[in-house]
Length: 396
Figure 1 (cartoon, rainbow, N blue to C red):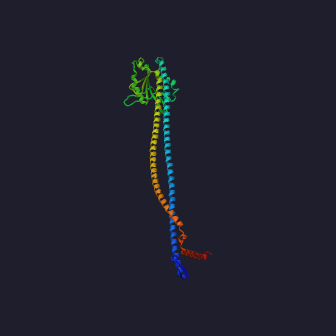
Figure 2 (cartoon, rainbow, N blue to C red; figure 1 turned 180 degrees about the horizontal axis):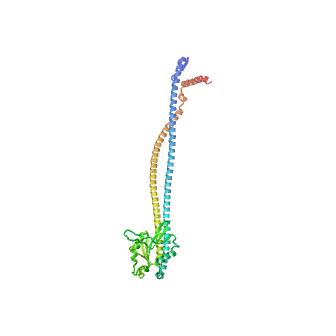
Figure 3 (cartoon, helix red, strand yellow; figure 1 turned 45 degrees about the horizontal axis):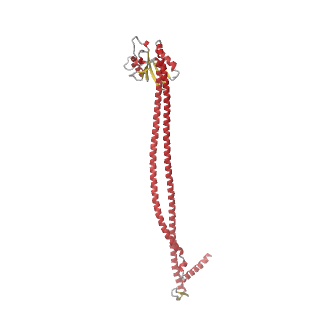
């Protein structure tokens, strides 16, 4: 038999062992289940706190990642700006280099032109020298064959200094449509460089002794000379004449009016006219070469400018696209930061509640629950002893 005392009124009463065991079981099960429920609730609450802390840590890591990305974007922007500046300097250097190259080429050509002008001045002095001997030579030529005289002059004065030139007798008579008989000139002078004519001249020599008693004029031979020039594909035509000696208008080198590239000279101007036309032909070739070079340079500069414009356009488009993507990224980052800040505030509020709950859970123990209740404390103590006895043999 067991005696039980009421905790409220103090009345003692006796119960048999079976009833006592039943009462004890009821008290133990109720307390145990209540304690178990509280522990389960505590565990669940701890899990929630753990998840909340993990979410806070994830948010912190995310913020750190966003900060790193922001720094990376800033560095990339600085690199782009630096690249733009460097490219601008490179393009300016290229432009200045091209301008300097053009200026150097122009200076070189100007120097060449000055040299040519000096040569022309020298030739002009030579022409004046020939003029001073005009009278003496004219008298001498009256007793000589004009063609032989010109041929000898060429071999003596020009052949040594113009090895690439030819001065040959025109032996081929050519007849054009409508002509009853063919015609030919006296001599053809040609100078070639790289297989191309620098200058070609059809010569006709007329001496007073070569004509009949009827006086002829120089103009009587212009048409035939022009025709012979064209037949033999010569650039110039020159009449070397002793006709009309009393006409002072035919002194020196005379341009024949009405005919293309035709000159009338006295025998003393035979060498100077060849020299002048050779120099003119070389200048013409130099001018053509310079024109081709200038055209090529112009094409090169145009291509460079086109490439520069295309580069600027493509570069500008890339910068615009990069700026657009950059702005979109910044906008997305700003939105994410705002969202994370809202989450942060919610987590901070939740963390405050969790801390309060944790403090309450930590203060909740079986000892506090049974404080002031001797009966329940005794029952729990008895339950622990019984459990210890039951588990003892198994542990052994």
